[in-house]
Length: 247
Ligand SMILES: C[S@@+](CC[C@H](N)C(=O)[O-])C[C@H]1O[C@@H](n2cnc3c(N)ncnc32)[C@H](O)[C@@H]1O
Image (tube, rainbow, N blue to C red; front, side):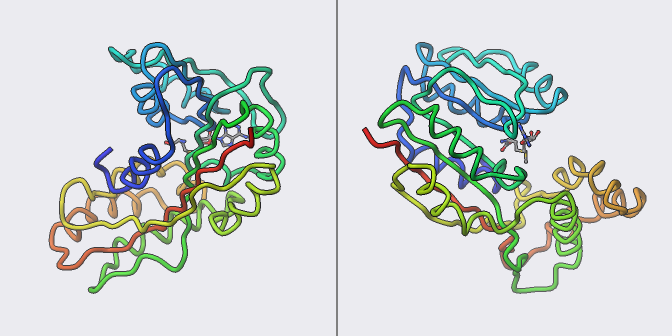
C-alpha cells in the first residue's frame, strides 16, 4: 500500500474499524487489492465478498492466491446499478466506484440496507479539483492527468462526487463518523511513478481518441520528469468517508 494512490486507503482502513471475524462486502472490487487488504484485517474467521461487473477484473482478482492468516475472499459478478444481494454484512468498502454509477444515491441506499445494525461503510472517491499543482513545470504529468480525467469524465463519471458524499450517506440513513480529504502527492521516488497508471488506462485513452503512439511516448517519458522533480506534485484529491448504520 506504499503507492501514493494507496496511502489514503491505508489511513481509511486504519480508521474504519475492521476487526477480526467481520463479514465484509467490497463493491467494484476490480483486481481485488482492497478486498485482499481487508481480508488480512478481518482474519481467517472473517469473510470478504468482492463484487464487480467486469469478468476480466474478477479473473485477475481470483488469480491471487489466498494469504495465510487472512479471510477467504470470494468474488462474484454483480451489476450494482440493477442487482442487489440477499446477505447482510458488518462492513462495506468502496474505493473509486460510486463516481462511475449513474445513480450512486440509489446504489448507496440499497447498500445501506445490507448493513447489519452498527455496521459501517468506508468510502474513498477521487476528484479532479483543478490538479495537478506543482512548484515547477510538469508538462508530462499535466498531460497524463488531463487525458485520464477527460477520458473518465467522457465515460460519464461524476468527478466531483467527493463533495456529495456527506449528503448521500445521510440520505441513505447512515450516520457520518468521519469525512476528510487528502491530496495524492507525487515526488521523485520510484513509488510515485504514474506511468503504470497511464498504461492501465491505455485502452480507455485510445477509446477517448488519444493516438496510441502519443500514449506510448508519454509512458516512456513520464519517469524522466518524475526523477528530476524538485517539489512534490499535488496530483489528485481523495475524499474519504466512514459512516455507520444506527443500532
Ligand atoms: C476505478 S475501478 C476501482 C477498483 C477497486 N475498487 C480499486 O480501488 O482498486 C472501478 C471498478 O468499479 C467497477 N464497476 C463500475 N460500475 C460497476 C457496476 N455497475 N457494478 C459493479 N461494478 C462496477 C468497475 O468494473 C471497476 O472494476
